[in-house]
Length: 114
Length: 114
Image (tube, chains in turn orange, yellow):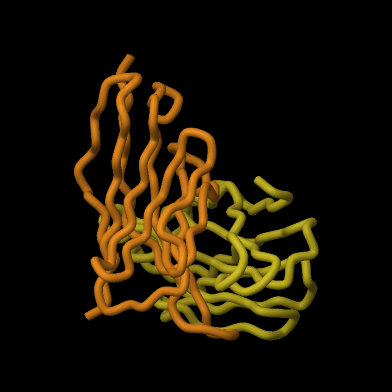
């Protein structure tokens, strides 16, 4: 069956360290993958998109990798800050044309301690 | 929240009553989506729309119907609410198909069915 998996356990790290979150998928062949941030009581907010022909994408302190052989994406936050504490969701597109839809992982909660 | 509002923001209702949630956008985006978010399941697509009067089912559409008579409004109706429909509901919009465009989410509606 098709699955998209993120570590359900919260990730606790010290301020200043690099946080690495993992997104694994099976039985999908997505053309691209997205990462969203969600704060408690709010809707998800888009962070980064990476396409299947891109190995790595960066935006300020954020970096995303996409390995279609391993069927895995890694999301890195360097020099983490307490304000980075949130739940991070990965999402991939399934289908194409008018049937193309985003499938979301359950999210990983990151807690950055000062 | 990218010009997206949801109403109501909170609702308590009884089993068997009809409920309608409204999503309103001011971005003139073509695509609109309804998701529900539950612990252990993440975000799941209920229905989506790719234009006025054009809608399609998502992953968890049973017990839900939608209508889109204007570009800016997308309504989600629970014909006869059940306790299993207690959830947080998010509306999202995108300018093009999910394949090429990110989704922007509303603030969510918290629904409790007693």
